[in-house]
Amino acid sequence: MDTRELFARLIRCEAEGEGDSGMRAVATVVMNRVRVPYGEYHDVGMGSLRRVIEQICQFSCYKTTISGSQNIQNVWSMTPRAIDYEIADWAISGGIHTGAGSLALWYMNPFQPECPNFFPYNRNGYWYTRINLHCFYNPTNRYAQT
Image 1 (cartoon, rainbow, N blue to C red):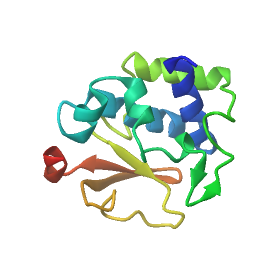
Image 2: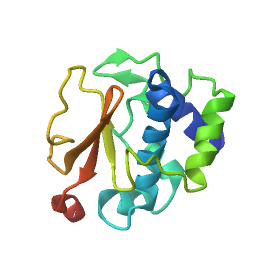
Image 3: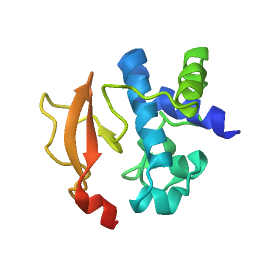
Image 4: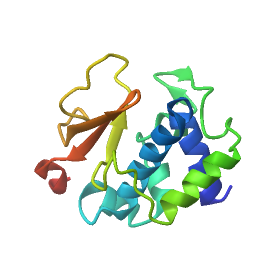
């Protein structure tokens, strides 16, 4: 599968229930990781969308098993729709969800009303905003050292 299709599948899998705005915010985070000029995502991704998507332990939808159980909602089981391709193309061409911002490198669904102040749990990201069910995080100064 080509990178564009993989990205469209990831967007659908990670954020389909979040509507257009939530899917654009998730796509923004993925592309922020591609474009960040420092830290882990710069070193591992090297500006490659495919490498960012395929980085180990980053996106639950890229895994076929989670905690030893089969993950049936993954990029291989999702068929991208026109909207998924549209958002992928928008993000690849430089679109940025203004709510998520150009710095956010992480998102997560906390399955509770409040977003944790820091994420991931190594405290490299600080809470920036919430869009629908997802919490979005900007990098701390500590992230640059990863």
